[in-house]
Image (tube, rainbow, N blue to C red; front, side, top):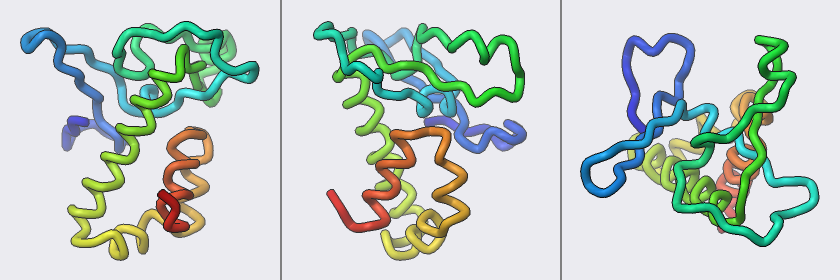
Length: 135
């Protein structure tokens, strides 16, 4: 994840994936983190190794209401795995940045921080696991 000090209210920055050593895929990080598992499960197909959210279509209400909570439906178990790994990596990096897991938990595991991530269900779930000490 790349951040920019002038990015305004978006505290997550931009997700970047290098392809073939030269090309890059870019996705706004909050969008990448907002994937949800399909209600009926995955249909058995697997997507390419995509950065989560790339080319995902937002629901119609996202286009109609600028205040709508926008999520996209993950297209495969592989995409979900990539998203969960990105989140776990982010948690590890944040723990190092704060000096330890315990110090990061003082910021990330408070009710206000957990509720702030409720609109990104997989991020919320992984953060709750981290806060409770689950693998």
